[in-house]
Length: 498
Length: 111
Image 1 (cartoon, chains in turn yellow, purple):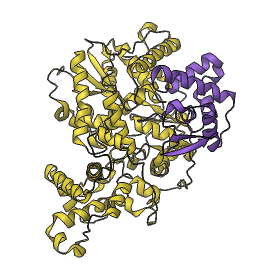
Image 2 (cartoon, rainbow over the protein chains, first blue to last red):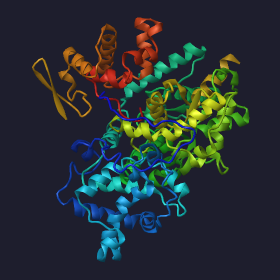
Image 3 (cartoon, rainbow over the protein chains, first blue to last red):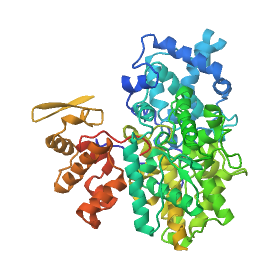
């Protein structure tokens, strides 16, 4: 619990674009993965001897595989549109946290080894040799990108810095320099089934405890079934939902919704994790292996539908990549989205009048909603454009009387990252996380002042944990972050009471 | 990795000061770790720490915050069975800080 000393950004009338402070975050690097963490994922345990060749070889490999990666490295015209769009730049003032500068860390090496001009006239085109200093800088600054893709919304060419940062991390892993937080966690998924390392007996005990709690609170018996063969729906949710606050309140909300709808559903101890940190480290292989667990669980349990709980990047993978990673899902019921988001599921029931919500149950709260970056910018919900923005809000509005949105340029596709996404939710990056939360905290402060907002709802495990950690730095309290389905949980009228 | 020396015994800890080998844990080590964080462990803290160790013994993981608050509430009375009480004892978060003094590994993931 080492105390970290740093200045917390001050909230002013407007978010000011800060003057640059060279090297302001050069000291911020996450712990490096141990050899055991690396090897479990198929990466070298430590920096390999011929790492320069391996790194350039890997870069070449990625350039060949992903056309987008090469285009993004070639196409930037340095227009500057992205420079003030990154929450980490706004919060830290470090110029290398401007998206264009972050991309350039890789781009200048790309130019040196893969472009004619860079091979012959490196100085003229800003090309540099790959050396240890460059590698270290990659490690430092590609772990100051939460892969939120806000910058890509504003880039006239749509350059996706997240893809560049994923490639950089993949190259780093390939030479033996991985990040402890992500890689240790992926190892736990392979060994135990989830990011938390929660074994089946502990999961079962936790779920039984939650059933007791719901019964105590409501007088209604609501089940949270585990590994129930023949259930209709498999719920895949982040393991934080079994463990952390306010996540667990959301989980109880899903259970109550399933109960009220009379659905047959189950969790799986084998696929007890929706999150997939393989994406954060840019590793297709690991991403695929983790995704395959969901397929196997669905087949083994014989379910007809898969529903995802509140997890931002899980929904990106589920919505955008799951079919190619672990498909085809031709064994699932085609009358429903494959897979479906829990918000879509609940929204659908509300539309049909199949569940009843008593909004007054949340009258002690004035709520706003934080769009999680992966949901906002990489997915959709429902069958209409912008459903990923409207459906969660409709569910909230059906559950409580008092809802206000934050400023337009901080929500929807322009939403700001919580500051802890993309594999950065670790205590060794606390300074970065606190500073990166600044634009969101500023927007929240404004709705608190203008509309008396008391709580912010989110649908991502990382966002929820990040906010409960950084809130106190900005004068908020831990319990002011809530799960979206926590609001549903408070409001839902359960069958036995009707 | 590093080591800390407690009563002449050298024990290995990770970068964040969590015990590397959980069988090496003693009360003295827990108290030493807390002291390094400017935290003096009183009976209230020890009650939580021993519950964590018992739970870990059975389930190989620290209990969820809710499981912990419920157990505390049952044992020590309802006024203590809430996360506010636990955060007062362990301001860096009951899961992480209390686990450290109990010699348990840090919970990982989106928590």
